Image (cartoon, rainbow, N blue to C red; front, side, top):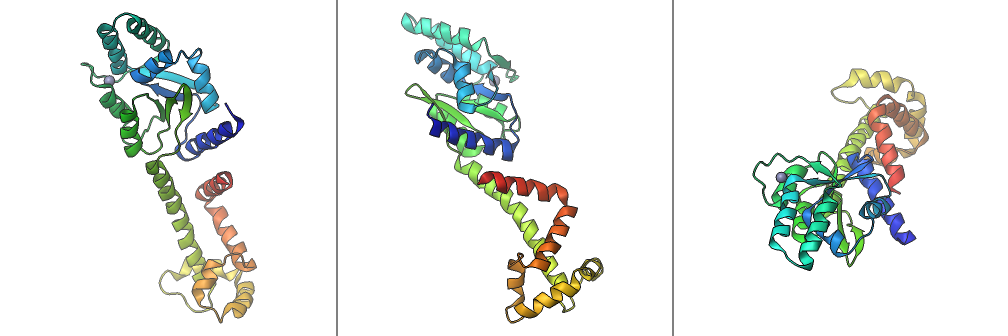
Length: 262
Ligand SMILES: [Zn+2]
C-alpha cells in the first residue's frame, strides 16, 4: 500500500476511533459477496489485507444468513464456479459467526441491516462486494466504515455524507454549549447589571472584576457582542479557562478532538 494512501486511511480510521469510539480489534462484518470476491481475486491472506488497510487488529465475522447465502451459491454452481463457491465457504468458516437470530435465513442485505442497526452501535466495519448493500447502509447509518475490492485492491471508502453531517452535528452541539458559556461570561464581566440569574454569576465576577473593567474601557466603543466573540483578551480568556476547568469532562474531550482533527 502506498504511503500516502496508508496515511489517509490512518487518518480516516482515527476519525471513527475518535467520534464513534471504535476499538481494536475492529469487528469486520464480511458479507457473502465479499467472501466470494476474496476467492475470485485469489487474495492470499485476507486477514493480512484487512490489517494493512485498517492498520489495526481485526476480527472478521460473518452472519448466519450470509453463510446460508454462500451454501445456496454452492448449490447453484458447477465446474469452476463450484470450486470457488466451496473455497468461499471454507474461508468464511475461519471467521467468527455473528449470530443474527434469523431462524429462517433472510436476504443478506436485510440481515446486515438488522445486525448493524440504525446507529451501528456495535461498531462494525462492513465489508461487502455488493454495491447495492454498501450504498444502502452508507446512506442511512452514520459511523459505519465500508470496505470493498476495486480491481483486486482493497479500498476503505471515504467517510459518507451521513457520517460527516453527524460528526458536524456532534461538534456543533459541543461548540454551541461553549458559545453560550462565553456569552454568560461576557455578561458577567459587564459593569451593567445583568437581568435574571445574578447571584452565582456575581460571585464569579468578583475575582476578575477589577481587571476586566479596565479592559472593558478600551472596547467600550464597540458593541458588547464583540467582546463576547473575542475571548483572547487577557482577563476574559483567563476567566474562560477557569470556567472550562470546572467542567472538565466536556472541555477536555472537545480540546482533544480539535487537536487531532488538524
Ligand atoms: Zn441473519
